[in-house]
Image (tube, rainbow, N blue to C red; front, side, top):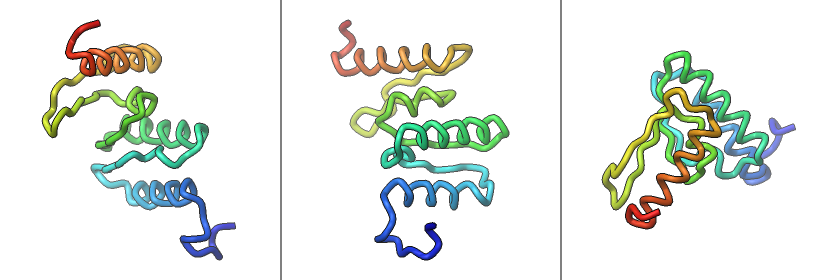
Length: 117
């Protein structure tokens, strides 16, 4: 369906899925992903994040920049950057995806309020 289309004829989500496929196909040691789910629908986002988890568990490093708590909750480690400096970091450890999501949300609230809850 997409093979005969020009880039301006496809949606942002289709472009983003194609970009992800191009990045993953060569199995690089490190993947740089800048807002990889930004233009994707919820199911495509979840599918891509599951692929990221699988390849990360296989030994590939993924450096993902995101504002999505959901996307971040799929990671093993989350760095919080404020004014260009790593301000805080948390690790998933044995937490479930839901628990890590909550931990990320609480950390964002703490950082936004200056440490007050």
